[in-house]
Length: 161
Image (cartoon, rainbow, N blue to C red):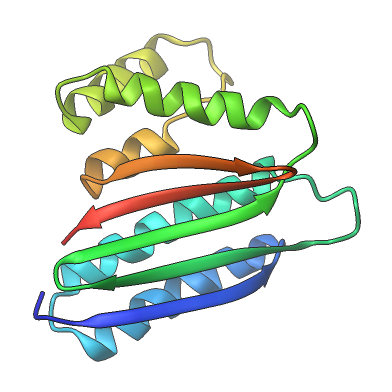
């Protein structure tokens, strides 16, 4: 990708229909600015996975059905971050940290992805795959970080394009 600098920061309603809208919007936004279609697709894929996780695992019981998407970068680096509410004492954060630690236990995201695929293939039908974060670590070759502040969790993917 050519040198660039960008910043997208938007509140998002926690509705499934918004995931596809934002994936398409992010990809189209970057396609309009940059010639690297693969890089645009990678940023959009990571965005979609993190948005899906926020909707699946966020705490939407308090009436605030909004979370935050932040995409930024410059040069050949990009960061995608999604911030959503979680319940106090939620297992979500510990599960996210566990998945990231598991990925980091492999020499490469490629090896972690292959190991997770084997686990999924051997798991009983209907089991949760927990493949999403492993897939984007592999496909985008990104580093994942989880931050918690009170009742908010932020999942961050750092990408080299």
